[in-house]
Amino acid sequence: MPYIPLDENLPGITGLLNYRLDTALPIRQLTQILLRGESTLTEGERELIATVVSNGNQCRFCTNAHTAAADVLLGETETAEKVKNDPDNASVSEKMKYLLEIARKTQVSGKNVTTELVEKAKQAGATDLELHDTVLIAALFSLYNRYVDGLASVTPTEPAFYNRLAGILKTNGYLPSANRYAALKAD
Image 1 (cartoon, rainbow, N blue to C red):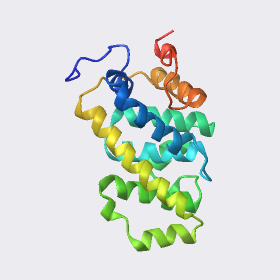
Image 2 (cartoon, rainbow, N blue to C red):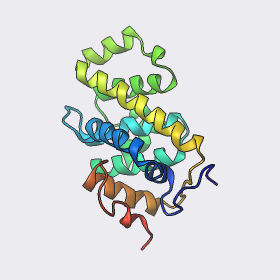
Image 3 (cartoon, one colour):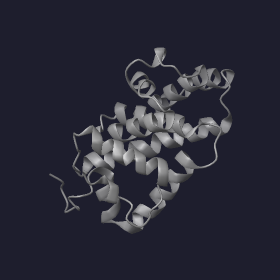
Image 4 (cartoon, helix red, strand yellow):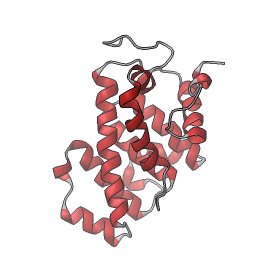
C-alpha cells in the first residue's frame, strides 16, 4: 500500500511520476537522454546498467521493468538474467562487463569505483563518455529505486505487465506522451 495517494492504475514509478508532473519532466528528460539518446552503448546495454543497479538495490519494480526492457531491446531473455546473477559468464563484451561492475560499485557508493577498475574498463575499450554515462545511469537508477521503494509504490507480480511496459519504453522512450500508459492495462 503506497504511503501517499497514487493512481491505482499506475504502479511503480509510473504513479509517482504522474503524482508530481513538474518533477517528473526533468527526470524523464534525463532518462531519455541517458537511455535513448546518442551513445556508443546500445539501448539494450544501457537498460542492462539500469537492471543491474535496480537488482543490486533490491527494487523489484525497477528490476522487473528494466529486465523486460533489456530483453525486448536485445531480442532475447538470457543476457539480462546473466548480468544480474552471473555477470562473469554473461554474453556481453569485456568492456560491458567492466561497465556493469562500475555500475554495481556506484550503486553501493560512488567511492567504490576505483582507478584500477576505470583503467581496466578503458583498456577494454570504454570511452570517457561511456564511463560518465554508466556512473550517471547507476546514480539515477539508485534514485529511482529509492523513490519507488521509499513511497511503497505498488509492484505488480505478473510478467505480462512488465512486458507491456517494456513495449512502451521501446516504442516511446521515457518522455511523456498522451495516453502513455493506456497499454499497461491487462487485455
